[in-house]
Image (cartoon, rainbow, N blue to C red):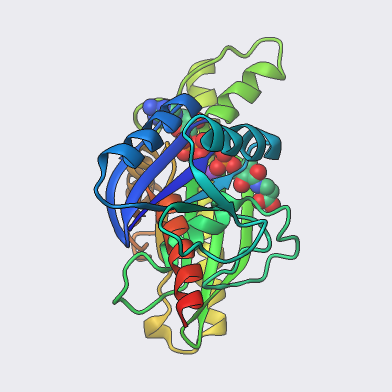
Length: 301
Ligand SMILES: Nc1ncnc2c1ncn2[C@@H]1O[C@H](COP(=O)(O)OP(=O)(O)O)[C@@H](O)[C@H]1O
Ligand SMILES: CC(C)(COP(=O)(O)O)[C@@H](O)C(=O)NCCC(=O)O
Ligand SMILES: [K+]
């Protein structure tokens, strides 16, 4: 049985086709039309049935719920069962279950966010993806950094082998920082980031802005990693087990990892051993698959 996971971010639309937990194919920077075409191909070309579509969106609701799903019904002629009608996954092989992740979707973790309705569903899917990234490993407290339009930091703790999402921060994305400097001033041009991590002491307008954005971002990331690392030390007595897992996704994940490695070597205390970042570009999509799987397994029991 096939599942399509769809992530409507503020900048790009991504989707992945799964067969159970196995990721068969992923497509980035899709238009809605590309996505509809892809669904059509899946429907017509695969011998296996498309069982479900699970969607995370941080865009305006109407955009996905009305136009996209209505189009699937009409243009692609899918017989759809929407999760707003019922939380159950359809058992009829002709019916495709569409789950639009919302505050009522059953989850394989505990969500301690105080406003689950307003929580970005990409953040929720990402922490679940990180927590269930590898089946066999012991689940560790994990910090997710999603470097997309915004940079979000999200912490999932583990207690009695249960994942507990505790919250995090929403910060400005990399592009957004340069755009904001330009937009809100009279004289600052629009620059792009330097390939390398700049020297903090910028000696030109360009260098000073790149220092502010890139070096500033690294200092911010260090502050947040240190906070969560200390947090798990003080709540866990077992010093040995209290290493923070760090999983990074989003369009700027790789460039941030490069700067972070330069930053750790040149600007942090070398006696501190920072955990290596795990880069997982498909983290949100993987999280969506784990949620769909959870709903389905729960029904089977
Ligand atoms: N090929 C690319 N297309 C779009 N964005 C890219 C690309 N490569 C890097 N980026 C960066 O990734 C960011 C978008 O990341 P993404 O994770 O897709 O965001 P979102 O989930 O918010 O839509 C852009 O702001 C840009 O800085
Ligand atoms: C923080 C976000 C804008 C990040 O979006 P993204 O950069 O992934 O496109 C999104 O998760 C969102 O709209 N969140 C709603 C507020 C909240 O999470 O509490
Ligand atoms: K993000």
